[in-house]
Image 1 (tube, rainbow, N blue to C red):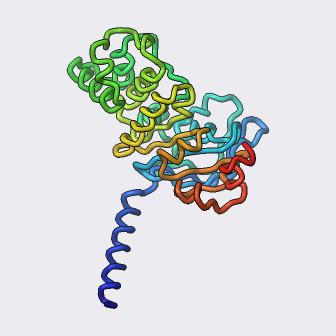
Image 2 (cartoon, one colour):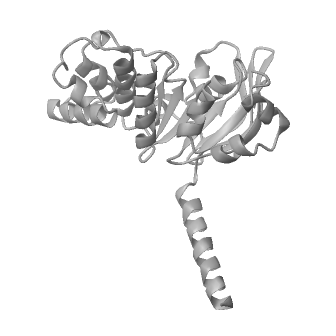
Length: 272
């Protein structure tokens, strides 16, 4: 009996160690502080965001969720007076070191709150990124366009209108097109800033199903105001308040047994 228990424990430890190896940190954040001029927007952030999982950032408006999201592909570089200290690493390489910003944004794609297709055809929206990175063969572009639209679960809806303007699509279709556009340059990480807040419930459900499907191949970090959405789709959740991460852990634990009183107050609707 003792031997059986020992064997079971070994098997359990082996599984956990395999899971740990599989879910190594794709992005490591160490003591990150971000300032807009004199305003201290992010305060001492420490997080390990695992590979091929969905991490959700929740919290009230203006608490630093989107600011941190945009730091991961250096979109805050465009903001005047923005200063960052600490470390933000992608696969152990410092994003704010010598990393080429264009290469970084190829590896870390972004999908915004409101669908923002370019005023061009569906095909050209998807081919835009690969062309900028030097892909000009029509056969290659055709393949990228089809693969990306299939990955974004919208190929069947648009395959007969590839040459028509993307602006003619519905809001939900436009957002999936924007996801396909982000996927076309083969990123490793997909940042999503409230990707369903401008959409109806049916489109929201389609995007959520899609996101769960995409985590097989991509690391996904999503800002959401919708706590039910975080519960439905994410593996890990971080609760932000006034520029700090109050609590970060497995989504199930955060929503069923939060360790911090402030987290509990927020998820039970006492503020926010």
